[in-house]
Length: 165
Image 1 (cartoon, rainbow, N blue to C red):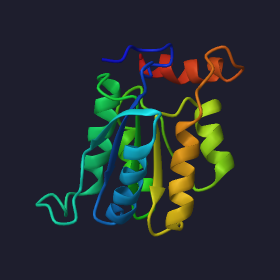
Image 2 (image 1 turned 180 degrees about the vertical axis):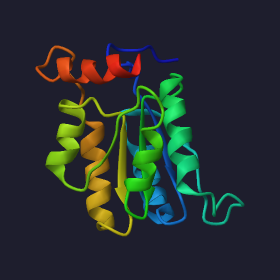
Image 3 (image 1 turned 90 degrees about the vertical axis):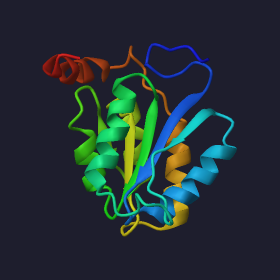
Image 4 (image 1 turned 60 degrees about the vertical axis):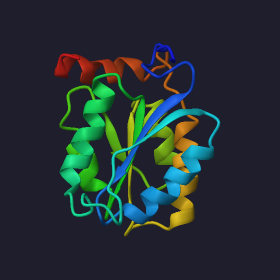
């Protein structure tokens, strides 16, 4: 069992949720395989959809909400979600109090989502970027850790205070 760090992340390796709707399932499956080989990851939690599963047509809001709830409840540290654009799953995850989800399709935005915003959920769009870039960005994103002593901490606190988290 891994402990919790100051950032809410597991100190014994990250617990990462991965999910998608049908428009992002191919990228989800590719990144899932990468996560299963990543030594920084203690646990990968696949919340679907599966191409051949009965959940294949489950709409994106259910995926984003489920991932956000898992992080909010302390059952996971971070999530990587896919849909057609990345926008729908981000909007859904952001409905959970305390969750900060960002759609990012470039290295600088991926970096700043964590370092400036303490983002716990990265979303990307299968119809927007190439697979190899999505895989690289997921790997990069998992390498960043928010510094609670940074200049950005007071800004993130405004958001947390507003939500009562």
